[in-house]
Length: 225
Length: 318
Image (cartoon, chains in turn cyan, purple):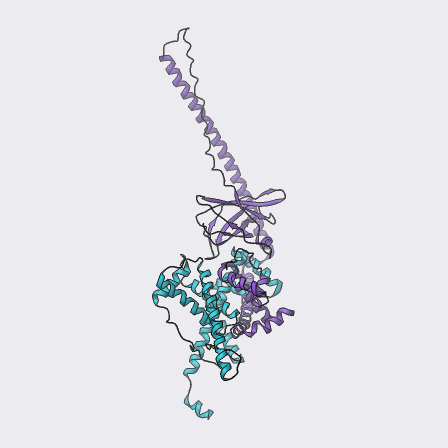
């Protein structure tokens, strides 16, 4: 069962190309990252809103970054350093506004139906259950995505995430030593590759769903009736 | 609002943060530091992944397991991450088996796989290294001896030339009368080359403890204030154990995960029962942010091994 995504709140205009370019450059803070800093900051913001139990964490993260982009487009400069600190400041405001918006919705709902749960502003794709077919599809996509990694990346992520408990820690120390990097640096690399795999799997599954939808036949409706 | 000067959270606190077990004040503090501090953000990401994998692998227990099920899994987004992790761990374990099998096949196919042959090859390599080392030492000594001889000869030639000039001069100068009291200038002594003095090293600016000793609730990331005009800063890197004859320090910028400076090979020193390595780092690469200094040791027989890591931060310029 899937619920489609739709915007349900009053929407600010999206970022212009100029604003987005300035946002990327500002986040890079002098070290070009090919958009990696944007993706990392967005990930942190989504996690922040999700930890605060906001159902629309992705939208709130985008709202935060859009506001910063618009500020950069209008004034060109943000003095606060590092950029992540300013992102946090704006995120707090966005969070507070989201809390207030929920309270207003609860009051409206109370007056009509007596419901106490805040209505979510946006609806995101949710898989209601994880059927065997979906698990199998995810596994197939993972295997494919693992193969698409370079050999050193694949070896790193397999060595980093295999095993459990004590063996895992020893293996990671040994891996860091072999690569000549610190444990922190190893963790950063492993997490980045894992995130890449997650994105790859989502895209792979989206393609599979699209292929499945494209073979839909009107006869299916007749059978259902 | 800024609470970054307090001690960074350890991994246990990060897990409590992910499970919503901290006080409101601590949660606010970690909200900020996990957003702003690059190293803490990376550690949180890794800790959360490990927690989720632990649940999937069935290694969580007790309160952590209960809290994970009741709190962490309450979010649809986090449940989706758990579902991904279940497939991910399964795929990784399958790939690990393939990797191990490929390694075993490579080792079996390699002619150096026989243990006896491997030991023979190591023994031959060791003998060659020793012979080469002895030859190098002899060559250097002979070279030094020759250089010393040459220096002495050059000095004596210079002295002889000076004396010859003086004699020439004295032949041309009229003999002084007995009443003259002007002294005869002595021949200039041969001059030895004095090596240029090394510039004096800056005073130690920061003493760093290895991360394994420094991590904990009571510790904080040391902060370095660099006054204007200073071109180099000195660090003393304390060693937990002195396992290597020489060490090399590498300054890493965690924001870009790159080494921005590295030292030469340095011998450790001992004082009052503590071993340490002293380095001098140019100020140029340093910006107001966190850094790590990774220390690698030179293993006998070649190769390097990570010995310790140190964290510090550069304070913003005033």
